[in-house]
Length: 257
Ligand SMILES: [Zn+2]
Image 1 (tube, rainbow, N blue to C red):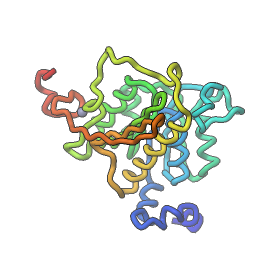
Image 2: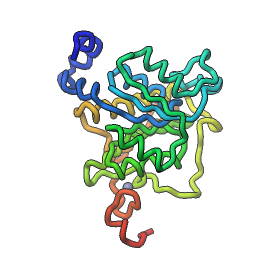
Image 3: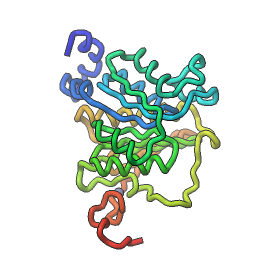
Image 4: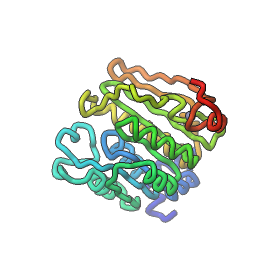
C-alpha cells in the first residue's frame, strides 16, 4: 500500500480486527451492485470510500426528480442522466482509486451469470422480486456471496447469503418465489428517505466483512428494522431442504410442496 493509501484508509487500519491485511483484500476486490437507486446510493458511497477496488454498477433507469428525495448518489443538475453514470461521477469524486464499470441494462439470467462470475461479492439493491430471485439463482450457481437489502414505507430488512458454506440458506429458502406475491414498490407506496441509508449502510458493513475477512456475517439471520417505532430485530432461518434453487437433493426429486 502506498503512503497516500495508508493515510486515506488509516481509520480502518487502526482497527485491530481490520488492519492492513483486510484493507488490502478490500482494495483488491471486485463487486457487483444491482441497482443505483435508494439502496445502491449509500452502498456504493460507503464501499467506494472504503476502497473497494472495482465496482460493476447495473441499472437501466434515468435520474428523475422524484428520485432525489432518497437516491443520494444523484443530484438536481444530473436529472435525465443514466443513474449508473450519475453514480459513477459521485463515486469518482469520493474516491478516484475505485474503478467503476457502469452498465445500463435490465439484467436477464444470461447477463447476470456474465457479471456475477466476474466478482467476489454481489449486492442486491434492486426493487423487484423477479430480479432478486434471478440474482439469487446466479449467486447460488456460482457460489458467490450475496448481500440483499430491501426497504418500503418504514420497514427494512437485510440478510447475507453465502453458499460457500454448505448448510447456508439462500434467498429462495427464506422467500419462496410465487406468482401471487403482491409486490409493494417505493415508486407507488412511498418510503422514508433515511431508512434507505440505514439498510444500505448495513449492506455495506456486511460487504466489507466478507471482503475483508473479519466479523460474523449475517448468514441464516434476517435483520429487520421498523423505523416507525425504531425497533431492530433478528430472526434466524435455515436452509430449506426442498429448496429448488440451492438444495442439490431436491434437484432430482419431485417437489415436496
Ligand atoms: Zn435455497
